[in-house]
Amino acid sequence: MNFDISENQTMIAQMIRDFGEKEIRPKMMEWDEAQEFPIDLFKKLGGLGLMGVLVPEKYNGSGFGYHEYVTAIVELSKIDGSIGLSMAAHNSLCTGHIMQFGNETQKEKYLPKLATGEWIGAWGLTEPNTGSDAGNMKTVAVQDGDYYVINGAKNFITHGKSGDVAVVIVRTGEVGDSHGMTAFVVERGTPGFTGGRKENKLGMRASETAEMIFDNCRVHKDQMLGNVGEGFIQSMKILDGGRISIAALSLGIAEGAYLAALQYAQERHQFNQPIAKFQGISFKLADMATKIEAAKLLIYQAADLKNKGKSVNKESAMAKLYASEIAVEVANEAVQIFGGYGFTKDYPVEKFYRDVKLCTIGEGTSEIQKLVISRAILK
Ligand SMILES: Cc1cc2nc3c(=O)[nH]c(=O)nc-3n(C[C@H](O)[C@H](O)[C@H](O)COP(=O)(O)OP(=O)(O)OC[C@H]3O[C@@H](n4cnc5c(N)ncnc54)[C@H](O)[C@@H]3O)c2cc1C
Image (cartoon, rainbow, N blue to C red; front, side, top):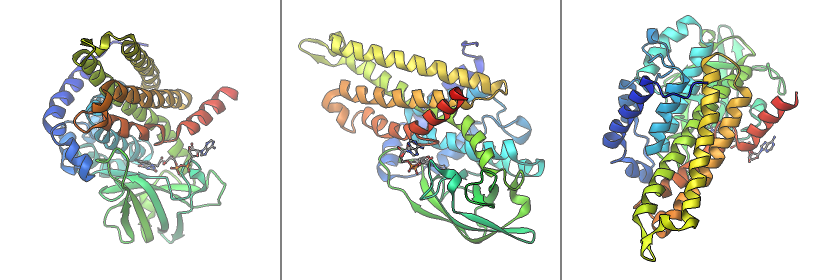
C-alpha cells in the first residue's frame, strides 16, 4: 500500500482549507444554532468538484478515486462535521447508488446534475421502525402497469426535505426475503412524494435530517435502479463504500478536535507553566495522536482496496468502527483539555463533541459494524 500523499490530495486539502476558512468557519456556529442547512454552500462545493468526487468526468464529475475522496471529507470535517456529513451522504449514497447501479440513461440524466451540485441527493433506506434491521422495511411499491405505486415513510434521511432527487429502497416482495426489495430514483415534485418532519438534533445540526413520505406516489418502471428484488443487496454494497466516508468524517472531526487541543495545551498556563507540560495532559495528546494515526491506516487500507475494485465489506466496517469510536474518545479528551472553556461555545471543541456521536450511529451503528466484521471473520 502506498501512503504517499498525491499531488491531487495536496491540492484538494489546500483548496478546502482556503474555501473553509472563508465560506464555512465564519458562519458555521450560526448554522448550528439555527439548525440551518446551507444549501447555497453545497452549490459552491459543486463548483469546486466536491459534489461528484468519484463521478467520471464524462458525467461532469471530478473522476477521482477514494484517496482523494477521503482527503476531501477529512478536510471539510476538520472544520465542520455537518458539512462533511452532507457532502459524504450526497456523494456516497444517492450519487454512488445511481453511478453503481443505474443504467446509461439514468446516469446521463442524473449524474451531471448531482456532480455539479445543481441537484442535492438523498438516499432512503431507514424507516421509523426499521433502522439496523432495514431488511424488515414496510414502505411498499405495488406494480400497476408500467408504474409502481409507493406508500410508506422513510425517516432520518439526510436531505429528506431539500433533496432534489432521492434513491429510495422499498418492499416489492415478501418480508424476510432479502430479494424482496427494489431501488427507485424519485424526483422532488413527483405527486405523492413529500418531505416530512425535520429532526432537531444534538449535533450535525447544519446537515438536514428529515422524513420522506410516499402517499400513492406513482413512479414509472424506468425509474427502477437495476432489477426488481435487487434493492437490499445494492444497498449493502453502497453502505460498504459509504462506511469509508463515515470513517473519513470521523477522522476529520478527531483531527480537528486534536489540533485545537494541541494548540490550547501549549497556550494555556496553570501553575506557572503550559498545561501541555503536565504529563496528565501530554499523555492524553499522545493517545489522541496515536489513535488518529491508527484510524488513518485502516481508512486508507479500505480506500486502497476500493480503488482496486476489491471487496471492502470487512475493511470498511473495521475502519468505520474504529475511526468513529476513537473520534468520540478524542473529542471527549479535547473538551477535557480545554477545561471549562471546552464546555462553552467560544471554542470549537464543544461542537466537535456534539457532532462526533453521529459517527458511531449513521450508516450502521458500531454494534452492526461488529456484526459485519464477525460474520466476515467467522465464515
Ligand atoms: C443524522 C443522521 C443521518 C442519517 N442519514 C440517513 C440517510 O441519509 N439515509 C438513511 O437511510 N438513514 C439515515 N440515517 C439512519 C441511520 O442509518 C440509523 O439511525 C442507524 O442505522 C441506526 O438505526 P436506528 O436509529 O433505527 O437504531 P436501532 O436499529 O433501533 O438500534 C438501536 C440500538 O440497538 C442496537 N442494535 C440493533 N440491532 C442490533 C443487533 N443485531 N445486535 C446488537 N445491537 C443491535 C444498535 O446498535 C443501537 O445501539 C441517519 C441517522 C442520523 C441520526
